[in-house]
Length: 606
Image (cartoon, rainbow, N blue to C red; front, top):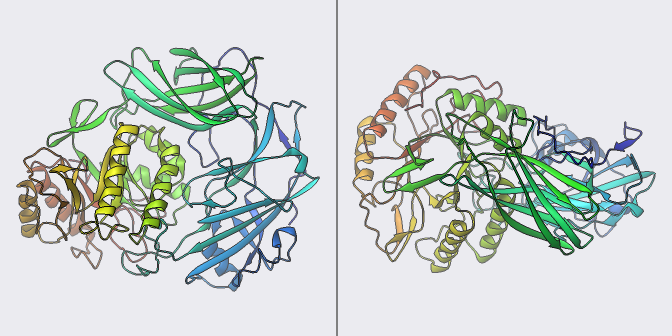
């Protein structure tokens, strides 16, 4: 396939000494932190072939291959298979291997500076991805020949000497039904398609782009921890250095509408080659706090300045907020708050559809969205920041409990954390859900130890989040201490009288007979109101497994009745199931394509 663009022109980051106020920048790429440079999307038509016999590596397809089909990137391998076979949908069993290739012309520099280099970034791709440029195997910035994971971005720095007048980018993607890898609700060898388990959706699922970056720069990731009592903001900045030396890290904080920064701080650093993280603390005077009712955001311009005054820059927004728990209650910015939440499963929704979903969820009266064991386009996290929706995010779960599945789970958690530490909307993390991938949690000390260790790591490293060990039931108690910030329960019944009984049992601290499994495992746990109670799944009315009214008016009335019963009891929040229909789960309140509500606005607001 020949590229439609004849030249790729890149302009370099400006070396202006004066810092300009950050402005609203339309972001066409799946990223949360921006870099003020040029980029070239490599989306569009690619050559495509399946490799069912795994011959491609042996036969060196990356050096030349006659591809049978074309496919549009981004798009799932399932869609590309179906198009190649002339089908509506093409499921696969056990393992899938697909190869993609496209060409692009040599990018042209706007000048001859040696301070910059070219980089290719994949917004998300996988589960296993190998990439070649002109037949040369590339390594990610993290030095991986094979990148694992399909929910977060990864990048390759390019050696300019290897660029040709016409360049060929070759990608090999592999996925399996392996139950040990993070899958969320995609089917596996353990959980097969049907009911609450969905078709696989993998491969080239987000954009890929070519851009110019500085050799010595800040990675496009920013950690933010605010201490609202003293107006201090702790930033975690990641540097990427090719030329060791003395640098200055300069952080400029703006009110979005102001030309002048409200805070400027310089931090001199001696940096060696490679990548490292640096914590710095900035005082932001006269701060306004972020909340769903007042989603106030600040703009950050972070600059790395070398000894010659050359500036490498990234831009992000952030908010100041504090979210935590004391006793039975949750507090946002030291004010007691109740979670009016909804379960959200994006499935195969496009970015534009997800945007519509978020606005619709806001109009339902929700202040929180539980993004259910799935990765979403990072721009959705930014949108939640802007419109005022708290987010409860979760690690896509493996489906088997083994040492290898725990290693994969931790790796996925760390990949997600590196890119979601910026957003004030993210307030809660779940490590597991309903013991998927931790099925032996009640009997295996190794499983419980891993979850406890991860919980402790999160509490020390990421104090801005509330952390749930295993959402729904079978929380871990060790020496009588709950290894979860929240005591959550999934309660499904369509009958109002039974609903009242379950809520009474939960509020009274009954640990067994409330949810499908005991609420706590490990050592005895005696509940006396020391932890917030969250009904983190309920309702599901319309789905055959959960029952309840099919008529929309009846459904809305049942939701009102159930919600009223929740608010009569000492419960700190609830999450209705769910936002949209997805595959067999026909229990949504929002049209998955248009975002239109099928129930009255404000229905889920307390």
